[in-house]
Length: 130
Image (cartoon, rainbow, N blue to C red; front, side, top):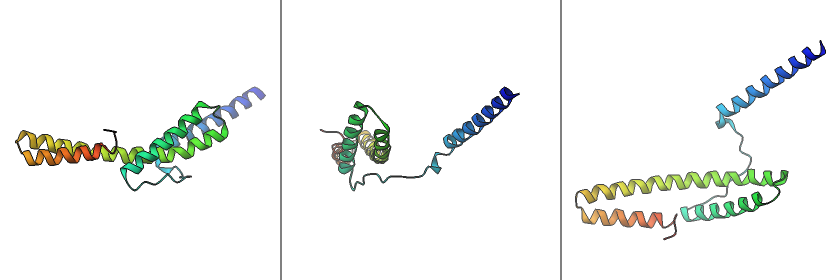
C-alpha cells in the first residue's frame, strides 16, 4: 500500500514537472529578463561587446564552473544573444547589398556595381577583419 502511494506521488510529481518543462519549452517568450545586455550604438561596438563576452565565457568555462560561474554565464548570455541578433541583422543587410551588386553586374551598371561593392566592403570590414 505504501509503495503504491509513493509510486502515485512520484508519478504525479513527474507529471507536474514534465508539464511545466514542456510549457517552458513551448513559450520561451514568457521568460523574465533578469539582466541588461551590454548596449552598443554601432556594429563596431557590438563586435567589441561580443569579443569581450566571449573572452569572459571562455575563461569561465575553463574553470570549475561552479554556481557563481553559472550565474555569471547567465548574465553574459544577454549580451551574447543581443550581439548575435545585431550581427545577424547586419549580415542580412549586407546580403541584400551583395544581391544588388550582383543584379547591377548582370546589367553592366558600372557605377552601381562600384557603389554596392564599396558599401558591402565598408559594412563587412566592421564585422570581419580585412
